[in-house]
Length: 316
Image (cartoon, rainbow, N blue to C red; front, side):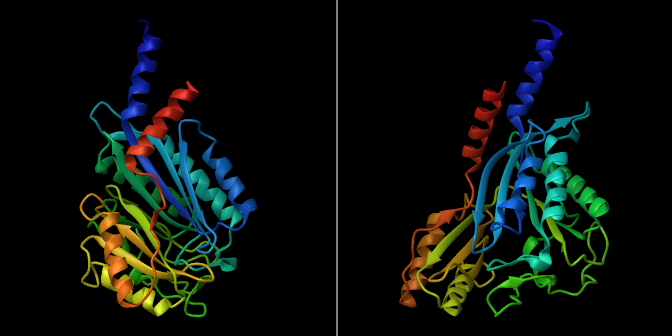
């Protein structure tokens, strides 16, 4: 076997084993023309793969799941991932195409690019995910002059995402008490960002960037427009409200005839969707409310890895 074949085989092995996954949440889902340049930017580098896209018109929010490999120097330190430039290119396209001042939806958000979460997959480590999150955060803060808040493993003290969001007023609706519209916070951010300026562009807002072991997003429809009841249920399900450990929840409007319990499962292998579903159903029955089967907004890590490897193999 010649040296070129050796290099190709080694690269292929890395591409299929040392993987990082990026969940990129953007505050737009209704304007197809705004999403098209973002998706074109995602495809500029063939070594980054879009595994999944989940968009919700009522929330006016889209989530892209992207995967690529990470490589290291001779000492084992991560030095490169195609995800880095792909994510930054998508962020640039999002800032060009979307104005937060013209955005509204039933899901909270603080920025055009609201959240970027990096997960390690396969044989990659959380340290590698944190490395990428910090690299992307520095680029976004410096290049686009947007306040960047790092969280979880990307933050020096491991600060939690929900803590930062509370400090910045993320959970407070500013339109009719049920929706979020425009930029409603002070232009001088109340908490010093980890990257970027302390003054906010009202058109772009701020961005959260973190690294974490796999986190699952699971939403449970409640067949009622009684938002106060949905919020009560959400509070009693969440760890913060004395409910299930490692579960975070929001009660939100979702369409004209329903609400939804939006759940973040921080340790889905410990407290999974079935347990959350059962708990919500029990609490909803006490409110005389009907509940539908919940749904994940993304694929499982195993399905993501399988889909990535299949797509990479097909492109050889």
